[in-house]
Amino acid sequence: MSVRSTPKTQIVVVGGGAAGLELVRRLGARFGRRDHDIILIDRNRTHIWKPLLHEVAAGSLDASLDEVGYRGHCHRWGYRYLYGTLDRIDRAARRVHIAPVLDPKGREVVAAHSVRYDYLVLAYGSMTNDFGTPGVAENCLFLDSRGQADAFRDQLLDQCLRVSRSMQTDPASDAHVRVVIVGGGATGVELAAELYNAADALGYYGLEVFDRSRLDVTLLEAGPRILPALPERLAEAAHQELEALGVKVRTGTAVTASLPSGMETAGAGQIPADLQVWAAGVKAVPIRQGLDGLEISRTNQVVVRPTLQVVGDDRVFAIGDCAFCKLPGQERPVPPRAQAAHQMAETAYANLVRLQQGKPLVEFAYHDHGSLVSLSRFSTVGSLMGSLLGGRMAVEGRLARFVYMSLYRMHILAVHGWIKGLAVISVGHINRFIRPKLKLH
Image 1: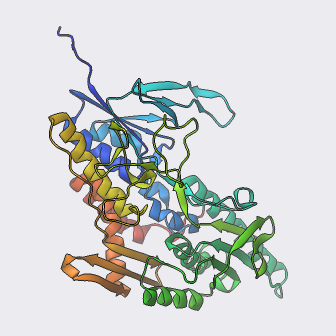
Image 2: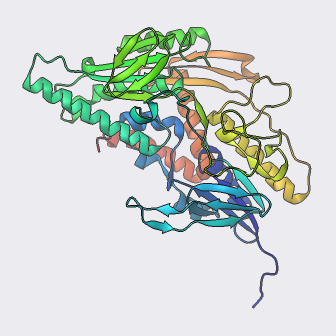
Image 3: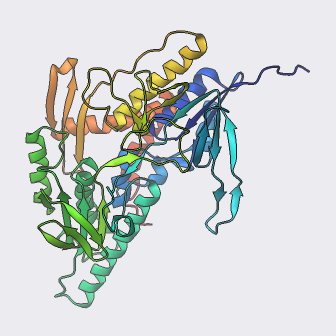
C-alpha cells in the first residue's frame, strides 16, 4: 500500500454566495479530490441567489425549490463543505478559525476549530448597512438571507390575515397592511412591486375579502430619485409604475429613526407602519475577531489588487461583495453586484490555476453589462451596455423581462453546469404551472 508523501493542496473558500459557489464548482471540476482539497465554509446550509430574496419575502417564490444544498452540490462537484462561521484568520500559520456551531438551545454542535489553507479566498458577501440609524436594528426587517425573507413573509401574512378578519367582522373597517420600505435601489423597488403581485393572489388562497386596496406601501428614498443606477428616464418610468400600483414614493426623505410604531423622517414626521424594511445600502459582513491585519475599506470590504489578491499576501484572495476593488484609472470601486461577483469568480479561478502553474496572473477587468429592475409581473426596466450595443441601450417591457430572467438562468448554469443547469431551468418552467402562485407556509 502506497502512502501519500505530500499533503494535498488545500484551497479554502469562505462564503457560498454567487461568487464563492461558482468558484468552488469550477475548482472542483478542474482539480477533483486526487491532489487537491477544495473546501467551502458557509454559515448557511443552502444557497439562494440574493437578487431573488424579495420574491421569497413576498411569497412569490418558494425558496425550497430554487435553493442549492451545499452537501449535495459538493458531492457532485468534488469539493468539501464545512458548516460554520469564519471567526478569524491567521495568515502566518495559514489557518482559518471557525466559530463553534450552536443549536437553537445554545448547545454546542461543532466545537471551534481551524482549517489550514495553501490558498484562501474570502467571499463571505455583504449585509444591509443601517448607517447607525437609531432603532433600525431593533424594529426593521432586512433581506440579506433566506431566513430574513421567510420572517418577513410570515409577518406579512399575519398582517394580511389580521386585516381580512377585521373586514369580515366590521365591513366598514378601514384597516390596512402598512409597509414602509427604506431605500429606492433595486431591492426596495422590486419588493414594493412584488407586494402588490402577492396581494392580488391572496384572494385565491382563503382571504377572499383582501385585495391590493388594503395594502399601504410607502417607499422612502433619501436621494432625489429612485434607482440611481438607471438612466433618469427609466427611473421615472419605474416611479410612475409604482405609483400606478399604489406605492407612495417619497424621494428626498431621510429617515432619522425607526420606532416600533413607524419611521421617523426629517421634515415629513412619522410614517406609521406594521412592517418596516430597511434596504438602503450594503456593507461587508464583519468578521468577529478580524482578518489579521488585512487592509479594510470604510464599508468593511477587503482591499484587493487588480489580480484580486489582498494587499500584502499573495495567497489570499477576496471576491464578490466583500472585496473592495478599485481598478487602475477608475474613480469608483467595482460595485457590489451579482454580475461583478460572477466575473470575479472567473478571474479568481484563472489566477488560482496560474499560481500553481507558475504562470503570470491576469488582472480583473469589470464589464458592466447594465442594470435591470423587475417590477414583478407588471413591468421591467433597465439598461444594457456592451460593444455589441454601441454603448448603453434602454430596454423596457418584454425584452427587459427576458434579459432579466436570463441573468438568473446564467447563474443556474454557472452553479450547476450545463447538463443539470438546463434540467433545473426546465423544471422551473413546469413549476410555474403546477405550483401555487404564492408560498403560504
